[in-house]
Length: 54
Image (cartoon, helix red, strand yellow):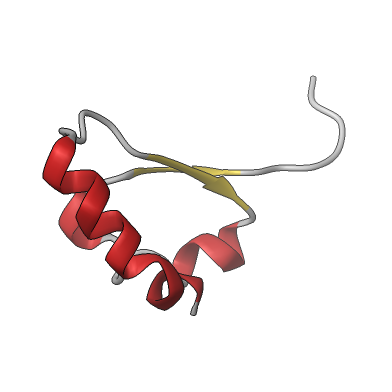
């Protein structure tokens, strides 16, 4: 998983910055893969929808 590749970098970022809000946007099937790994950050998930809207 991509998060495994950036774990060390995230640790460095969080040592010098405060996370105020985390938004994750994407297709529902992909977002489901991130619920558990990102739970500690309490992100807001937004499902990307395609097609026409009325």
